[in-house]
Length: 427
Ligand SMILES: *Cc1c(COP(=O)(O)O)cnc(C)c1O
Image (cartoon, rainbow, N blue to C red):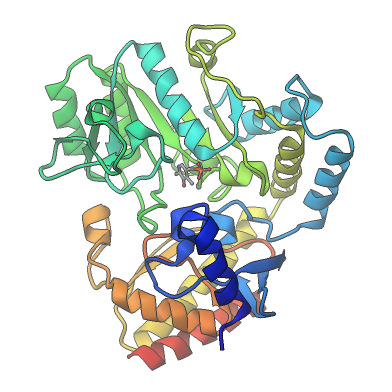
């Protein structure tokens, strides 16, 4: 007997490529058909077969308050009643801008866009316009959305020219994208020496969240700051995941390293499609209409999305938020470590506050290559074991798990118990 989700997904595959609108949702990495969701409430998701899951995906990061937070829902309804889009200035965009500037220490001015992809792509354009240089450096395993020039990682060798990761991207578009291993300052120094006065920007996830969660080593971010300054290049922090996640002021406030430009997304839209990029006035004023760098958007600063974002940030700003997320994240991580140890499963665990990852490997994970030592077949079995027990994890080893403010210690304990059982069965 097919489940409703299986029937639905079979139909969806006829009309949507892979049955999805974003590849990882298709469960390609773990096999099987994804549950099709009808409703989310707090820490829980409900599928069209009536199954309930404790959710650790949170729509890939945005839902730090959990699903359908009443205050966000009310703010959105109130905004919709006033009309959904004007393509003209509104109070809502200024309110969110002020919240962002107040929160992120390095941002003096901000431009709203509709996705993290747009934010990362536009920040690069601005950095190139500001410096008058073409080359950019990115790190292997860091994801900055799907803009052509950012769909590149290294081939072999420490310093290598970016080869496109996707068909349809001309090599001429990625030829200015230089890629190096995460946490490797020596490789960056080598590139700066090789291309003096040619590097416009170094773009980095200050905590990498798209190859699982990989933490910056102690001198890495401050080293990037120093090197970029020395060589007249801009430092861009892609905080699309980490912004408002690891601290209200993002990873930059946690590590006390100030980038020139910051990209935001996910949480900032409160569950709506929003991205943003911002930084020093001197740089941001190069944007049209003030300056020569063009970037625009019909729905940018959309009042409904701005209202959802502002309601979310106001709730996050209250005292105790990040302490609570830390407590829940720590409890979950500890429980998982113990369950793994008890069952003799090797896990390398990484965590900052409420974002965490369990790599099934016995080595350290410091970059993309070491992340790839993980046993993805084991993850696949573990993932399905958890799904059967009502825990919805990301359908890939190389993604973060997110705890929300809607989770309580009860759900965390249930999750740890489910993991204990799932691992006992697999070992
Ligand atoms: C999700 C993500 C993006 C892309 O954001 P979209 O809204 O999916 O376009 C960019 N950078 C990072 C670090 C991300 O995690």
